[in-house]
Image (cartoon, rainbow, N blue to C red; front, top):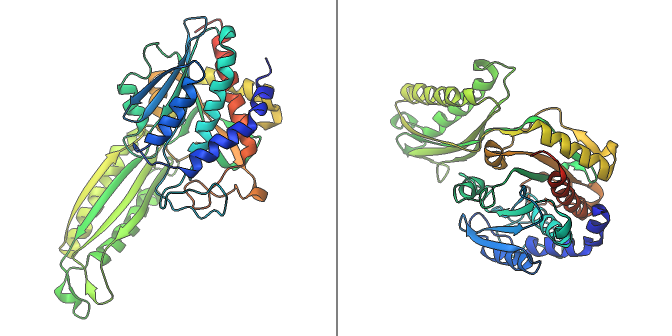
Length: 394
């Protein structure tokens, strides 16, 4: 069966669905219209549909001829970003945008459902289509869906997914055995001082100055206090404090993230941050609060399933388009929760094309994808399901 040809025959439909999702983005756990659209599409394919999993999640179950079950996953949520693209299918919701490719993921998985439903009699097992909410927000929709039984009834034997990647050219697919993506976290720091007039700083305790020292010292965790051979990121992504030019504020808020590939570093780095905060606030006479929220675990691909995926990439698109990713990525992905429970692999699907303006990074106001990648992703989903279910061994 030529699934690549079947996927390309769906290209116009894939573009239509992707543009629908793009125009009507919904952020984490608000994917009500999105999930309704997906459920309607699946139900018309004679696929059993379950809704309301982890609030807005949707699962489709296609029952073939066998006991094995493969799960295919797409995430649904958009981001709180105001789109700057000048396109006919621009987001209609101010402050909300599919700036990470989840609109493409959903359309490609729906495309795979359309093809696999036609191949139902030939499938040597079952396919679960997982449309998951809240990949972008902790604690992650994957965790909640697992807790609510998405990997049961029927029991899932393996899972497959991928992410649109604007750093790779359309047609390329990246793979990596073992650790692919990092542990994530979110932390919030409140530095409390004593407000007052900017002209008499000696009468105040300036949290802005404390914040500047804290930011500088946090960078030394990576550069001086942790083995340089250990991948580690400590980033402050938000700083808020003060209202005008001549007032020293009472407090400053910092928000940031820690990313590691070695889970043993997590508590160590958390302790270092706390020591920095204690030392600096003691020097200035201020106080602080520190909240550290652990996020997604390290994403580790199974060797055997990554080898299977690599074979599929080469068969579909040619050996030259199978790209081995040398170094792990410090971004996080809650697909890692599935891989803690069952075997599977997670790939990177190239969607970058500078001439089409699809080379902007994830979460950018001008993020977009090369829609020529849509049938490629659909073919990947489809062939992985067919080939896995055809394996003799579980």
